[in-house]
Each structure stands twice: as structure tokens, then as C-alpha cells.
Image (tube, rainbow, N blue to C red; front, top):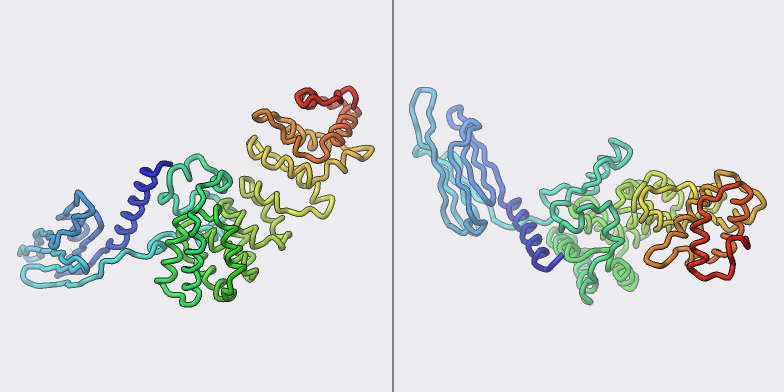
Length: 421
């Protein structure tokens, strides 16, 4: 995304926040009639008994700089008498509103005009996730509440968690240092102002690009872990932007406090956050295995690289995973081969028909040519595995991937031919 488009989106987001900051509705009554006044960034309106009777739409967001704005309409009472209803807005630093019916002032109020904190009046993401999990046992709606605030390239046709795998531009060299300074101030004095300062800094960059450097900086600091955990939890409870949730998950993981491991597991069910939950739960392998069984996308792909299979059943689990998406298959093929220990499996004298087909699926992906390269070349036991695979395949009369093996051997100019196996 170009600089112009990025700046345009930032301005759009800022406009939305300003609108949320100044939007307000006033309700009052006069002799049995409901009078309502609405004020937003782009318009003001007067409603009597639920019907809009006057309005003012602005052509520019900067028209708020006009010191006085008025609305008026006529109100007919039960006795047939008519009176003029007048609404006056005034002020720059403070918004003053006055509602008059005839000469009688029935409402007078003032409010300070200031931009709200970035999390205010927005859907907090973690409670939104927890609500889905508690209702359905899984994530039903993958579109996060902050989607409207993101660049189109970050959300269009992107499965949760995939954009982070593609990478972003690296942050400026001083970014982590500046973020640490704000975080330290927040830890020492947790107020809405210090939290807002850290929150806004987090929104400047993508956590995936600076996460490791942040953890290194935290390790070198003398930051109070209990206070850090408390503020990380505050972010998880209030964050309305995904990058802040990811940031908070890194902080929780650094503190190594697992009082909320079930909460982390629930958050990890949304695959946008699985990799960040893994950082916290890495030593809780049982929870990660439970999580993996409930995922099906890029979160599962990331998680599979972190799982440690210690039993034959767990090793076999990797062979049972299947994907319709070629990119996902390629992303986990080498991991499946290594963690299922197909080299050990194929060394046996006999294997089942099901095991042969599961191994065949993994090998087929490793033998796919992608831009002149093969994943098989990264596999430590490639020659031994191919030799024993061919032995089992011939014995069972299963030759489906033999053309792939032949092509691989020819392309790599191996001295060994398929017939030699």
C-alpha cells in the first residue's frame, strides 16, 4: 500500500475517532412532548416526538470551527398553542448547547471537546472473542471488530493469521526504545494518559516485526513483572485493535504468569492470535494440543511447528492432518515428515495401508516443484525415506506418487534411479 493510501486511511480513522468523541444525544420533555437533539461530526438534528423537524448537515468536518450553529422548529401543544423550539450550539474548546421553547430555557449544558482514547466507544476484541467461544464453543465470525480501521491489503482475502506470515516493513530503529519508555511510565504510573500513550505507540507498527526485540528489551530491563502483568491484562480487557491484543499477549508471555491460561486458550481459538498465545503457553503442551485440535487455518499451521510429540499417538497425529489449500500443505509438509518420524516408520518391515497413504500425501507435497525448488531437498533423510517408501509401495502395489519421485530424481540428477529402489 502506497504512502498516499496509508495516509488517507489514517485520516479516515482519525475522523471516525473525532466523530465518536463529539457525538452526543440530549433528551428532554416539554409539556408531554419528547424533544431530542443529536450532534455528530457531520450533522446536527432536532427531533420532536421521534420525528426529525430540523437538521444541519456539514460539508466539511472543519465546519465545527464555526462558533455558533442553530436549529429551530415549531411545536404544537395539546391546546392548539404553537411555540418555537430553538437549539443553539456554540463554543470551540467547549460545546455549549441550549434548548428553548418560546422564551423558556429547558436544557442548558456544556461539554469539553477532546478526542477520546483510541479504545473508547469501540468493541473490545478479547471480550468479543470470549463471547463467541462461550456461546458456540468456537469462532463463528472471523472478522474482528477493528477491521474497518485497517488498510484494505491487511484484510481483503486474508485468512486470520496469514498477513503476519507475509511480513510488513520493519519499524524505525528507535521504535522499540521509545515504546519501552512509554511502557515504563505506564507501569510506574498507570493512568488513562499513560495507557493512551503506550496504546497509540503500539498502533504505529506491527507487533510481528518488532516482537522479538521487545522481548529482548524487557529481559534487559528491571521492569516490575507483577505490574507489567496487571497492565497487560488491562490491555487484553480493553484493546479495540488487534495489534494491541498481540502486544498484550507478548507481555503476558514474558511475565510467565499463567493464571489466565484458559483465557489465553480461548483467545488462541481466533487464528489471528494463535502464534502470540503460543508464546505464553509454550510450556503447556497439553493446552496447545487441545488448541490444535480445534483449529483449521493459519493458526494451526503456526502451532504445528511448536508442538512436541512425545508418544506414537502424537507422532501419528501429524500424518492425519490434511489441507485443501496447497500453500498450507507446503507450509507444514516438512514439519509433518519430521515430527511424525516417517523415517522411523518406513524403516519397519511392515506398515499399514492407511499409514502408507498418509505418508504418500506428505511425500507428494515434499516432491512438488515450486519455482524450481523442492521441499524434499530440505529433508535430512530424503534418500533413505524414498528408498524405504518405494519398498513399501511396491509391496502394497501403490504407485500413485512414483511419477513425482521419478521426476525429482531426474531433476536433481541423482545417480540413483527409481528402479534401483
